[in-house]
Amino acid sequence: MRIRSLKYLIYRDFFLARKTIFINAALGLFLMIFGILVSLSSKYGNLALVPESYQEILGDMMFMFSCFLPVYACAGVGVSVIETMQFECDKKWRSFRLTTPVSGYMYALARYIVILSAVSVCMGIALLYMWGNSLITGEPVSGESIAFMLVLTFYFMMFSLLMQILIQVLGSADRAGIAMVILMIPAMFGVMWYGEKHMLIPVDEPVMPSLVNLCAKHLPKVSVTFVVVLVISFILTAKLYKRREK
Amino acid sequence: MSENVSATATYENAIEIKNLTKKYDGFTLDNISFCVPKGSIMGFIGQNGAGKSTTIKAILNIIKTDGGQISLLGMDHLKDEAAAKEQIAAVFDECPFHDSFKAKQLSIMFKGLYENWNEELFYSYLERFNLPRNKKIGKFSKGMKMKIQIATALSHGAKLLIMDEATTGLDPVVRNEILDIFREYLSDDTNSILMSSHITSDLDKIADCVTFIDKGKLLLTGYKDDILESHGLIKCSDADYQKMDAEDVVSARKSDFCVEVMVSDRMECKRKYAWANIEKTNLEEIMLFYVNKEKKEWA
Image (cartoon, rainbow over the protein chains, first blue to last red):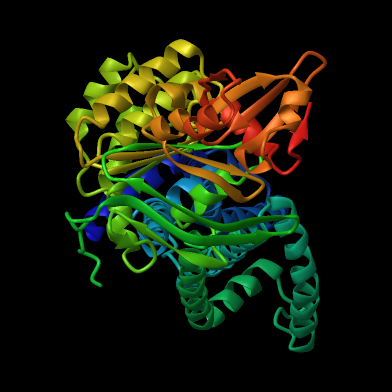
């Protein structure tokens, strides 16, 4: 019966997240189409006629745009779908959920399936965009760009999952936000200190390509961390869903 | 016991609560014990803050308790939780469903929550309650939200309906409709209802048994007719009241004109106080007098 439950709970969670998915996906699609048009224009259109002195700046901006667009498409959808987990925090629904014979794990599994499905589809579309863009520019899709997309998506999603756990534990988004700031400030300083100490991004090289290469280098570690965070957050979420009131 | 344990057909009481205790700061649910017989409707009466919702949440395992045992449909409410909840439906004073759901989404969700979800029955209740299928729940009135909750509760073969202040805030027409549905539900002898309310007039009409609770303590429990039959109200002068035995008196309400005395054994008091005209009473008055029992005399 419980696998059967999953099917209907997934439908429920998709239904609740439908507006979020639609809006972010539509925006991402719009930006991708815009990106394709800009690429076409830079090769065949007006942008191809831009004076050489501007080409360098334009090239860097286009490189940034083409790197961040897939990140937005995936991370944007991922984060906003994760945020719909807040529906589970509604006090009335929480009490009702505890009266049903479905376990917390089933509710959590349905939600995580929705999150991962939405992000996977967006990643597929983003890869399609990157491939389409590569056909226009004549440059092959680089592994570093894909790694960059994955790493940033994973980071944003981990951040968002942590935020949702905090909301459920602390009971409100305000308190969770404060807790997040308290946790993130030392973490950010730590990352900056580590980055500077180990010269992760060399000062005499362009930032974006260095950042992209850095992400590619750390993809395996970040992927493993993401999976671990995903599993832990899933278990915590399931336990929180079945946590009784005091 | 395995998850697939179903209610034993031989249970006598739909709900059995023994020595239920729950402590909060400033409030304690203190050794509550009562039963809801199978096939009956139990009215759970008390003032605001008496502990009705706390008791119901404990029964439904929404809150942790500090002691006591609860059995639902012959099953332990903790060990056989999933099996018990499969056959229980809860209705709360506020609709818990997301505002963007329409009837269709609700039905699909409930298919996943309960094995015995009956979609046809659900839609038939919607027609009967004149609830629109294509309107979002967020746009429903309070009465409509309550009706859709009840429709979902009655559509998965639940043997026990637990309602927490479900008729509060509804107009008399809607309340009567809902009470009629409960009477139909109880036409199956194996179905039972626990209904908490401070609207005693509803329980006067429908309840078979009543339990009174106040400040976390059980005041009285039993069959409604027996309670109404055994209790009575004497209106007398202060001098006559002073002659009465304290143990016969639940409490007395004093006014400028007379003293109203609630007695718990009408027949015995008729014999002892032949001068007194003992009137029949109702649940509301019984509740009022029991709530003031400790004071003994009140205005």
